[in-house]
Length: 502
Image (cartoon, rainbow, N blue to C red; front, side, top):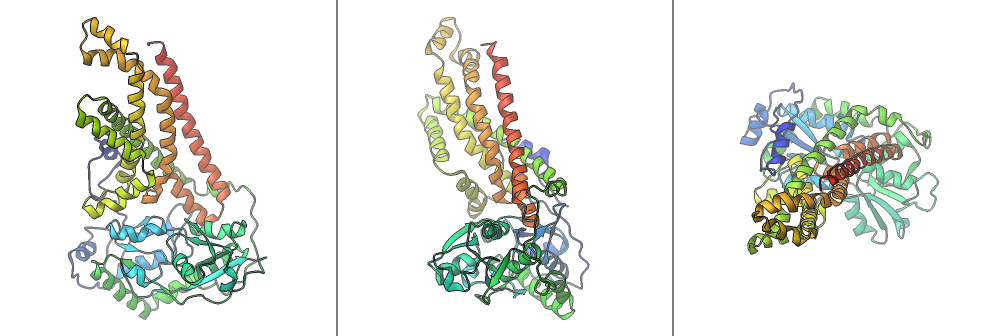
């Protein structure tokens, strides 16, 4: 297993204001295969020799194609099939990278992943950006409504209704073209889509028929109305330049069909979904502690990652804030302008836009950062812009007579600033700094959008398996509540202790 970024080195990167480093973590997968095809590209040869790892982007919130078990391990039809295809292609190591569905194609374009495997429909629009494998499973959109719904029976009935769809999926584009009168309710994950109907927040779901039928089989409460809306099929997505990897996957898929392995997989994951009757909407207690206790391991790992992100981002935020604050106060015009532009640009644009620019945009300029570095850098830059103004305001709030008195005692400007002005300003910084660090802690949940498995992302994968959003989100909210209150308590105690020295 190759790891270029250990935690200790991550902290070193944070202290050094995050240097651009390239590298990826890899997770080995067992691979006993028939003789693989001869490599025809350097990338495929490196994968077959084990020098590099095949990175597969997936949104593991869409059972039975991809989801997680209680220990956080990824499972499902796509997971098993990709592992088998990679093994037959002679690829030694495979790593599945969790990411929102809508980010898979951009991640391929940014060279953050090698394969997209998440029940992706083959379409002409997507084919302009990525290449597709041969069809690996028949798909097609279907309409799903609550068991009690009698008003929706066809596509025409969706006019004027609220329709839940997942962001970035074929459902969005297809409905906009074929039922423009429908009101689309776009959500991030598969479980949010189905639960919005069960909770009355939407009238229907339009999604892949296999996934909808699996939900009915596992959870009940919904029914399919009408036949398939489309006859589109699922394929694996590849970078345009990776034709050799795509061809190796296609050859392996044909081999798997020929030897019966494919039929065995489909029977395992889809065999009883259509035939087995549902027992109606399955009842669960309002709060299910087992949803938390059964996944204690992944939640603990996610919490540790969250704490790591918060700690490194705080260091960066203070560093950028101090530099920016002094730059804003500089008497040298170019330095003062740099500080002003930094604050104006970072505070004037949404954090999520900055995060996506760093992770998905910079690779197109030749700067590729691993997810953790991109997330920490974005958080540090964003929070640092607010710390900049806190530092500037605190220093300027100290009476000018303090500097004049220090200079009259023979102190230099630098010495007066260090020994007289900054100590008084620091005490005034503490309350707003505490508030800013609380905001940074809450914003850390957003880095889940760039594939970092922190607490919030782990929670989403648990919900995709248990459909217990209430318990999981209450638990995550409680954890963040405790973290933010600890930060506030530390800031208050520090302020009281230092007040006696000023």
